[in-house]
Image 1: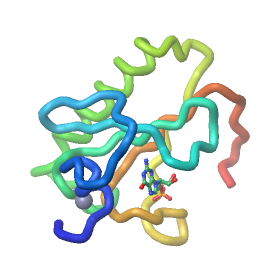
Image 2 (image 1 turned 90 degrees about the horizontal axis):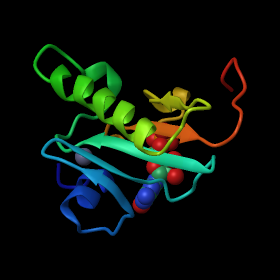
Image 3 (image 1 turned 30 degrees about the horizontal axis):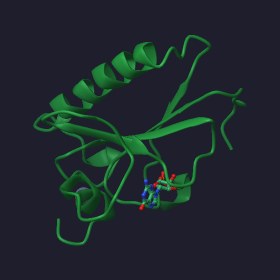
Length: 113
Ligand code: 5GP
Ligand code: ZN
């Protein structure tokens, strides 16, 4: 994807504060955090949004949740955390490379806004 902000971050063309990286997943700090811990967990493969997940690409999504589980343990997020993936403009998606917000360090309201 030529013109994708997060593909450029993965490629190192745009700087980011990397927290974790492996063959298929990249994790970095959100530039405008909304909680004391606010990470973005993304696949290196460009998938635009959650409703593009299918049988062929869902493996990386399950791996993303393994990474989130490991990071939560490593960071000691024993009080709880929230994972959010906004899909589409009316849900609040602003970057169209699928991403999972990992939020922690404060209480979160429900239902979501
Ligand atoms: P969305 O609104 O699509 O659910 O989430 C996109 C997230 O990407 C936002 O929380 C926003 O702060 C973050 N973001 C946008 N541009 C950049 C950037 O250049 N670097 C980093 N680290 N985060 C970004
Ligand atoms: Zn991308």
